[in-house]
Figure 1: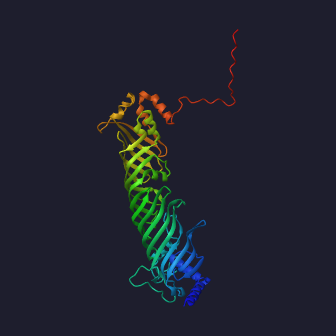
Figure 2 (figure 1 turned 180 degrees about the horizontal axis):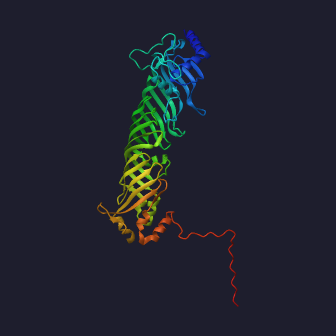
Figure 3 (figure 1 turned 180 degrees about the vertical axis):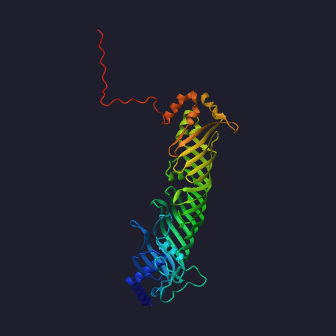
Length: 484
């Protein structure tokens, strides 16, 4: 019996590895997926079913030498006898270590290669009528994936069980996905993807997804994401997201319409215990400026093809916060002998904001230490330009330590016991500019303001140096004649 089983297995492998059978399997899968698929090698095992190696799916339309999909292994659990029939019946598909590069098309849509055009044409052409290509659409019959395909001459294909619309499982093990915008820039990457699902039809999938690491425009990173996932041509839905970012916890909901123009999306996120310094550093910012734990919420809608189309609102709170190494505050603290300014230990740090296309409006920003309060409101453009109306407020304890001329520039405000100076912040996020120094020192200490500006690297010489004409040489003065 063992010898007979070995002979049968050898014979089946020789059969599936024959040029004709391999071409048949390749053609069958290509028709099911609606795009071209290439197979390098086919084998059969009793425990693993049909194993396809060296799988590639090209980009449609072609983008250089890059494939849409390249996978190490494609495992198919099949009905064994269907290998010898005209139609391959697939029970489960497992894709091992796939690498997917998925670009947007010219309309800003993420579409499966070759699928959308055929599907749209089938929707538009009624049964029995002729399409633009001159092909008559006959009555449809279900396939093993549960999707209707036109039947041709010959015996009617086997249909799915009555009352069932799930005919196959789809698994992804260790996949890596890269989503590109129309210009070829990376929008998002998903590494270490594990996905187990049931296939509703050829283009609709439901299951559970796990992702080891996600990068959004190489600026924001998520780890250990898990969520139920539902995908069909109309919508990609991650309904219960849990993930980690900056050492903290993220929970939320994400929905995208991949087939609609510019792929619009909505997102709702709540986060807690996120390390502020780690988030800033991972986004390319300087290390050590802000420390503490972030928590808050964010709701937004936008278009993946247009980063400037984002709208939404949110709140951010910094717990156990500390602001340090900010050059302007450090310099002011050293010059004015206010130690608290050189390293702010924050009792309160929060901001409320809303987003419109291309613009973040800060409704309220408050940083409060035991004796000092910094507040601001204004706008930050998506390219980092600042326009903030700000205020530095101090209590009487700090005010009494200042020079009299500076002390007089702090005016009483509505908050009892506090005095403030208003100032503006402009420039960019990377290189902010402020008139705080000028407003602090006032007219009576104008020269001191120049000294402070010079100390901060912004000082300028009052008299520009005159350039000498080309070819002019400085004459050496005659040596003095010694008196007799």
